[in-house]
Length: 217
Image 1 (cartoon, rainbow, N blue to C red):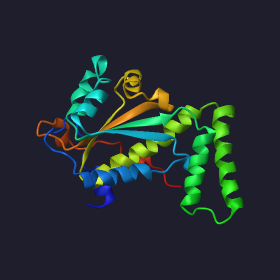
Image 2 (image 1 turned 180 degrees about the vertical axis):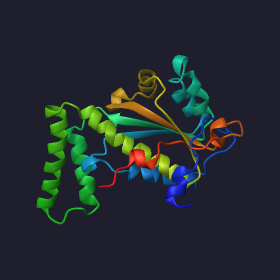
Image 3 (image 1 turned 135 degrees about the horizontal axis):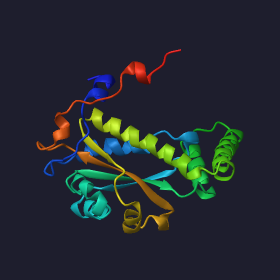
Image 4 (image 1 turned 60 degrees about the horizontal axis):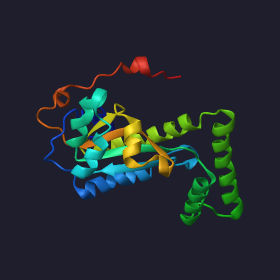
């Protein structure tokens, strides 16, 4: 299938087959997509927690209780669950770590180029933190770029996914000790293969018409 056909094919699951697991070499491709996802000024304001064992998924599922209990089985029965976490701040240490990695990877022809990159990225980090005062929202926007990258990548590999915002972030953050790492959870993706009982797998995708959503000028 080409990319347009993949986009129109149902790869969103509401019920996973707990007996089917994503092969390690296949999931490694998804991890690569997460690592290489785009972000504004290459800020990479994220961390991804992957649960693939019953014990790990049970820890994540603690956040899917009460009002969110409808998502519990989507976590427990999935092959892998990815918790998307955002940094609490783009501090100097993180910005320098990104810069040094870029230098190591050969992105700078001269010391001036390296200094210019650091100045530019720091400008945007300071702009959102101090002037716009929307640093958290700005970083979450970058996180959703990685989220969308993962979902499309999973579909190309014929892996079903279930995106979830329905969980108690406070419970999950505490369970995973995220605050101590300067992180907080934002969204979850369960991944695997849908079960025969998944009603959603049999339904066509539904979107507004192209002429409603797209304007050519």
